Length: 404
Image (tube, rainbow, N blue to C red; front, side, top):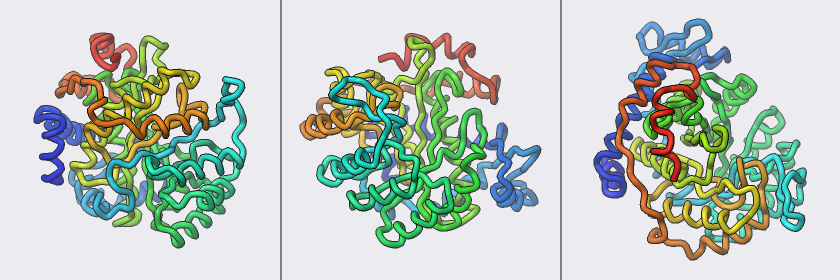
C-alpha cells in the first residue's frame, strides 16, 4: 500500500471506507484463490502453471486459481502512478459507442464515420478540460481509427487491438509518441476470460505496450448488490489480467480500468450510469487502486437519459463535481454518452465541455459513504459463479443503496 495515499484517502473518505477498501482487496484475492478464472488461452495457462510447484497457482480443467502471494508478487512489478504519462484528475473522452446521436434530428442510431472520429479528436485536442481520448465511437477499421486519432490529437490515447495489422500500427505509434494505451476487456462475468480477445492480449503485452484492463461486473446480476461485493468482483477480474500481463512481461505498464456497474431493478436490471451511486462506486474503485499505487481509469459523469436533456447535463455536472471533490487518476464516459453508452452525441460533447469548465468540488452532492457489508462476501461464497438477481442480499438492499 502507498501509505501517503492511504492517509489522503482517509481524509477524503473516512477511516471506515478505507478499511472497507483494504478488505475488498483481500476479498478479491480470496475470489481468485477459491473461485479462480476460466481460461483456455495456452500461453496464459502456461505462465501460471510455472508457479504450481511453489503452490502459488493451480491450473485445473481450464480454470486458473491464483494465490494472494502471487498476486502481491505481480503487483510489485507494475509501474506506479508517478511513472505514468497521464497526471491525476484527468477527464477523458472515452468509451466506445456503436452509434452517433443525430443532434439535429434528435435521435440516435447513426452509423459512425471517419469524419465523426476526426471531430471528436479535434475537440479533445482543442479543449483544456479534456486530458485525452479513447475511441468514443467504433469504426470497422481499427488502423484507420488509430491514424485519425493520432493525426488530430496529440494528447494520450487509448484504442483496441484485435488484429495483427492493428498491433503493428500500435507499436509504431507507441514508439513515436509513447502516450497510448491498448484497451482490453479481458474477462467477462462470471470470472471467465473472453477468448475472442485473449490471443491479442498476449501479443500486446509481449510487445510491451501499456494495457488498459477493463472489467464490469454488475451489482445485482453478476456480483453482490452492495458496494464492497461488486468492487471485490471487479477487482478480482482486473487483478487476474494484471497478473497475467506481469507474468508474460514483467514490468509492462498496466492500467486498472475496473468499471463496477449497478443493475437497476427499477429498469429491469439494466445498468444505470446516471446514478450518484455509480459515480461514487467508481470513485471508491479509483481510491483502492491509488492506494495500491496502480494507474487507474474508471467510469463517471455520464447519464441514463436517452437524449441530451437538461437532466443529462445536470448528471454531467454532478459527476464532475464528485470526482473533483474526492480525487482520482483518470475517468472516462464523462462528456458525450447517452443511455447505456449506446449513442455518442457530439453536440453533448461540445456543450458539456463548456458547462464543466465552471464546475467545482463545492458543487458535489452529499454522499453517504458506505461501510463494509459482510453479506457481500457471504453472497459470493454462497453463489460463486452464479447470478445474483435472486440473492437475498439483492432483495434486502433494494431501495436502500444504489438508488440515489
